Every structure is written in C-alpha cells, then in structure tokens.
Image 1 (tube, rainbow, N blue to C red):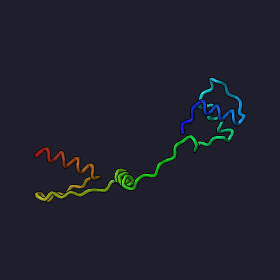
Image 2 (tube, one colour):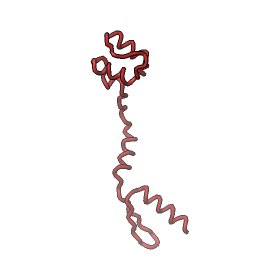
Image 3 (cartoon, rainbow, N blue to C red):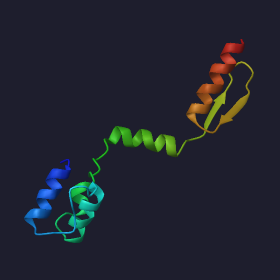
Image 4 (cartoon, helix red, strand yellow):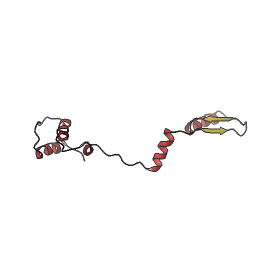
Amino acid sequence: MKYTINYLRQLLTDNNITGYNSRTPKLVLLSLLFNADVLTPEDILPTKKPIDQEYERLRTLRANPKKVTYTDAETGEVITYDSVYKARKARKRSDAKK
C-alpha cells in the first residue's frame, strides 16, 4: 500500500498525535507514526518475494563458476578456463580467427 501524505495525516489525527503542520514532509510524518508505534518498518518496506528455483540455480552459477577443460581433438592441446562464460567467449574468438 502506498502511504500518501493525506493518509498519514489522517492516521496522525486518528491517533491523537500532534507536532506537525500542513508543510511537514512525508518522512517526518512517518517518523512520528513510527515513534508512536502506529506503523512499523515492515508496513512501509516491501517484503522480498521467494526466488524461483531455476533462477536461484542461475545465480549460483554466476556467483560460483566452475572450471571448464577443453581438449582440442586435432592438436591434443588441453586448455582450462575459469568459467563457462570465459570458455565460450574464448572459443568464439578462436573460431573467428580461422
């Protein structure tokens, strides 16, 4: 829920809280409501949504990359890359040179 200034003023009036006027900024109104225990930070801040398992797996791949070993069938050369992304990038460059 979005808390408008008018709604916050109404909450202050309903709970008999004083110390503000028509030019009081929204943050001051919120702090008055927090201090009076009318609102909590959980009321204002959005809660985190659970992350889908597939996206969690992708985040793990980016955060914890696995080493990739590539063996060239023609030359027998073994190349080790730090991640799948670096291996793919290097293979694209080497294929373009040929």
